[in-house]
Length: 447
Image 1: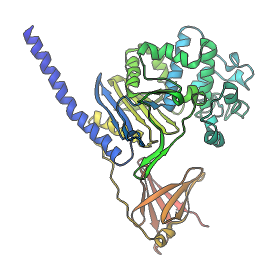
Image 2: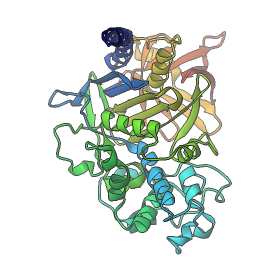
Image 3: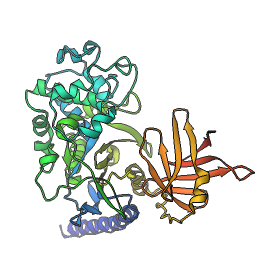
Image 4: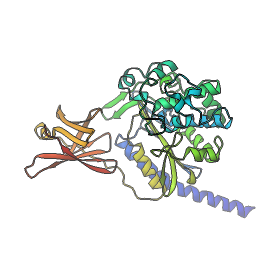
């Protein structure tokens, strides 16, 4: 008995000594992004049942100088979708619905409802127009409570993007319809159904829906950006608008409980999970994006909602869970996740480079002005204003670029660099766009 106890203690300390360097390396990686104003939020990384990192970075509330920590509460955005599909699968287990049911069974007056199935709603293959593509609504209405009739009026009479089952288009409207179906079948509000089937059994006590009225000291403030110049506070999207497509709020700890339940098949059966993780189009399953790492299946989903960007990634075979929740609309989460995976699998990766900007005279900046073609339907316009070079992609907001050296600029917020290309007459004829590990030549269009 004594020999067994000594062996167990030695094994425990060996595991602790192994985890400490890993934790320090993971912390160092995320801290680099935080120091560069490219991550503000909370990260949880776990492998094989051991939490390697659970830490907050930056501020929960900038004005009050309140730091993020592992208890900070964030809006999840589209991570909500996997909870919605899980409830649908639970209702199918109870034989209260079938994924093959037509939408017309629940909403007979919805146009072409007799050709759209529940499964197609889950897979984004229904063709239903996504209300989030309406810029006026997204700019002026999202903070206001809305009932089902108001929300459905945004998309039900719009032409389908394609015939059901014949294409793929990410549709938040489709996922709203899933929530409305849940309410009809379960005979309770969508929020109550998620609590009944998932939150309550898993004791996810820090998760909920009505973020607008949440009264908690752990509640974060969402920002469009946080940088050295200040913070741009974002409005809260009302839960009746984002609904079953994106209304859930939570913590990294509660999401880890969800991961553990999936690992142990506590809520969903192995068969249901295998079906959920089977991609049909665009590597998408039932509320999950499917990929691979080290020859093993990787599943996850990101979220984006006013003031928040989130990412939740799992490698079920190795019990890996990575959760990144940002309240500063940080756009580096997938990049951070990729490097965390490289760390966990002992693969090399580069830390992000701290770029220093220099001032160039406005006369020098003027030579870069003009339109550049990224692809036929996407251009970027370079213009000079107040001594800075601004980039405006088609139908996107203006990005202020910083000069690292002459002809080479970078976006201090995103991992994007631009290198201008000149001909033998020293005239700008195009640019090289460095983004997401790709290098794209964009020719300068003639005026």
